Every structure is written in structure tokens, then in C-alpha cells.
Amino acid sequence: QVHLVESGGGLVQAGGSLRLSCAASGRTFSTSAMGWFRQAPGKEREFVVAISRSGGITSYADSVKGRFTISRDNAKNTVNLQMNSLKPEDTAVYYCAAGLRGATTRYTGDYNYWGQGTQVTVSS
Image (cartoon, rainbow, N blue to C red; front, top):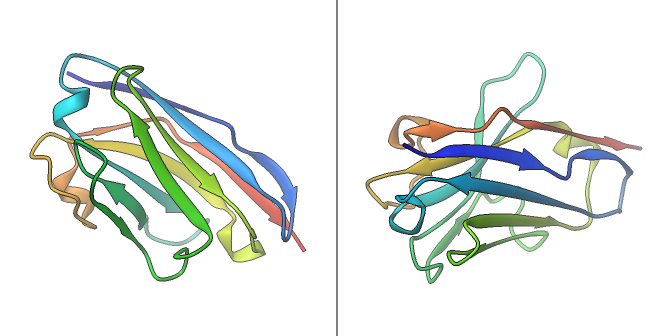
């Protein structure tokens, strides 16, 4: 069992930065791949970025590549998402997810546990 709690969302102007954090409880965190997804109003949940168990492998959506950076600290059971050069189209609820298989996939079905989400709003 993994319980995930996101934090760090908020309102920011275009071009600004935010840092999201996801705190995990449970012994399987270090053996789980972690991902960030987002969902804008009226749209399906979409993949943003994933990171492997050790942190050595990352996978980014093309829309955020070069602007977002994921990292994890297995000693602290946390995964972070640094978001720079934010755009209005980044506005969404951002969700943290844990995948027990350990694969850094883009598919929601590969993730077993989800947080409640944190709102990110980017104004133009």
C-alpha cells in the first residue's frame, strides 16, 4: 500500500516557476516507479513525466521537456517536480502516481496508487 499526498500547487504568471512535491508513505516507495500526470477541465488525464525506482531513468512528455524536471529522494520517500517557464496550457490538476511494476510508462493503467491532486494555474 502506498499513500501519496501532493503539495506545492498554486497560481503563477506565465514564465514563472513552481515546485510540486509528493510525499509517500509505505514500504514499497523505493521499489516503485513514480509519475506525474495532469488533467485540465474537460480533458483526459495526460502523462507529464515518470522516474524509475533508482531515479536513473526519466521520461518526459514532449510538451514539458526542457522545462520540467523530476527528481526523487528514496530516503525521504518524496518525489518532486520542478516546473519552469510555465505556460497557460500547463494549467491543470497535477497528480502523483506510483507504479509497483517499476516501469517508467506513460499509461495511467500502469500506476497502482494516486494522490488527490494539486491545482496549478498559470495566468497569461
